[in-house]
Image (cartoon, rainbow, N blue to C red):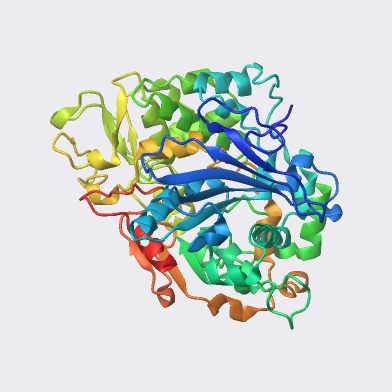
Length: 587
């Protein structure tokens, strides 16, 4: 069974891990008039943010026949629904509904913290709002049965040891050639999915216009802009169907509400032209033209989903979930994860990319991350903290390396990390970020632990410094609880990450001026038709080109993912800003 053969927590399979979901599920059979089938399942969470009810909702909205052969499970759309526990049970009775598009390589589970924090902040002001975190249709290809066991050991055995879970076995990670139907999942299908889902869940267009706020994170802001300008009934003269008339306002989370990738690039080459790309090397050259790109995707000459061998692909994205699961279950235990997973090209090159202190170590391949003693939290920090992870779009501010018993005298040596080279980071901040990078430097030495965001700057903080004498971090730069990051990666029924991001979704945006697409984005007034609120991570991918015309809320110390994962109480005791301001905007 391939990666994606039997994804967990979908309406077609309910073999659930203990503790992942509550047992009871509400199922609505298809009505005689063809109304889509719908399931809603309660999600049991260990989040410290209480008084918020989370459910997984799946609605049967089949793909068009033109897409061709595809798994039956991909005829369903899913989202995570968050609402105040003492609020109305029907979405139509909520005061507002926020619907969020995820960013690139991102799933619905990534919104867990910001959704909970915002719903709770609104409830404290007497408002009962809902937050819907969308899962793109391509996520139907994921097989998360191993993660769903709740055990990192069992998960590794499932993905790499041939051991079954609930009677099924894993047969390898999906390849581009096994996902031919994704060649037809581009902008049109993505925004149509959002429109159809909204229409199915809230049939009254006037109610949608009154109560729904549309937005997203990263690429989700661009998708919201496209949605706002899209004509859904093929008749530009009628506007009740226009995207902007499904929303009463827009919200942007480290992004802008636009139809261009330019603001997300951080480069001068431009995001929608052939020279610009948010992820260089991942996205095909679109200068060959719309027709040639589509032909390449359909024939398989171009990859159907974004993947770089040994850096970013379904296996390495799954590794983040495995690391989150281990860190959730045994945060302070010495990690065995990297000893348990195999030594293959994907895993080894990813380890080198994430843990090499310079290009010499990367090329030599020694020492590797396997040569160090790290706790499970320290492994997750290595993968995703902004002072270690080289890729800006997966960075969070979750604290810093430490070592057992370090105290004020320090412990395991931490040195500057210069891989990728600093000039690469300066040239492409959207890809590599610009923060000081740090790395443990005593293989086989002390056990490196993790100092959480709220312990940075404490009395026992050894304050590790760069070679130039500058502290690698301060309390003001740390905003996300690593335990909550681990929980969101491991516990959500819909993934934090996205293993099979459709290539066509980005190539369509790069080619958005082509007549075959431009004819659908006819309501240009939609971009400014509704009020908006924009949040920008002060250290994120837009930090050096903040869109001042949107009067954004700039969040000092935040990285690109922190706008989704930041803790409800920040260092210094202040309330997390996005939750408070977004809840107020919803009012």
